Image 1 (cartoon, one colour):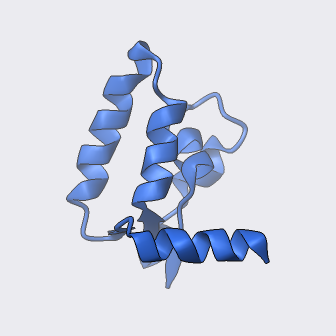
Image 2 (cartoon, rainbow, N blue to C red):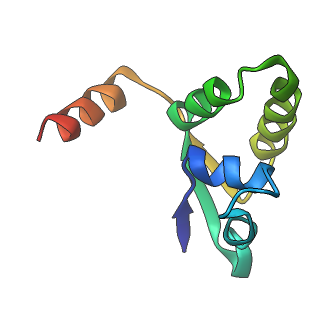
Length: 89
């Protein structure tokens, strides 16, 4: 089974004071794989753009980029157009 990880999931995972931190720690448990997108990672990088948080983003990105249990869907013009269409509907 695959589970989608959005920016809020990653932010909760990184912040032990976040109300959803404990739940975020269970993401991927029990053999579940994670699915995210380059769009999600771009939004996460923006949320962590303060200089003191950039290293945490870079470290997280490097670790998930090589994790076989996390699939990152690449950003493409077609995917972006499909997302806009979903938004419009």
